[in-house]
Image 1 (cartoon, rainbow, N blue to C red):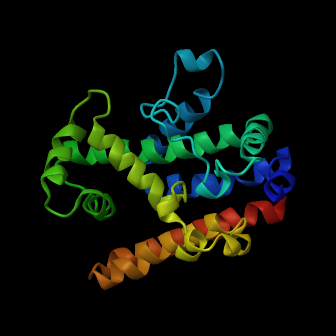
Image 2: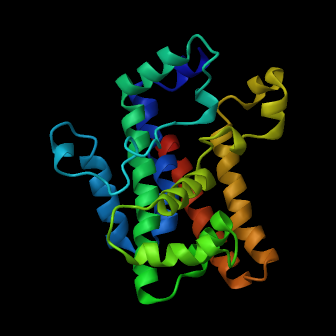
Length: 239
């Protein structure tokens, strides 16, 4: 009921734009054409009729990337279906798909471009290593898969989903331990899991990178991510 009264009106939906696109802008920095193309296809892919002709290469509905957040999805909750229906009616679900498709397609197209050039950026290589394990067979295989032009392979979809998990709490594995262990504690996390995930990503991309010895990249990530997070928070305040 809390979510129904706070998240499903048109004004709240519009205020989520910054949060939903922060990840895509961060991953697409230095590649404005890739980002713009992914963003445009994600928008057009939500429009009935047009989406028959134009869709994102990795379409959220086709590949099952439609869960808004694990926090809002509880099959045991009698209001869950009603909440999801209200998300659709308010446009929240469509906006969420735009954010997800822009993020994963920006990352994958950027990785394809780098694979064809023969060298991944540090951020892309780190993402692949985290997803499949450093120097693993799957890490080696995905390089050839990214160079191809065929429909996304299972490994590429796995990389896309991993990227999504890095940015959004769409699975219970991304929720705080106390949230999972104690149903009574979940009230304390209402409407906070998204922000906690953003802070967790910031820590991983900055402090985590620093500890791995990639200090220059850590500083760059810190400046960019901090700027984007502040900008995303400024949007709702301005409105």
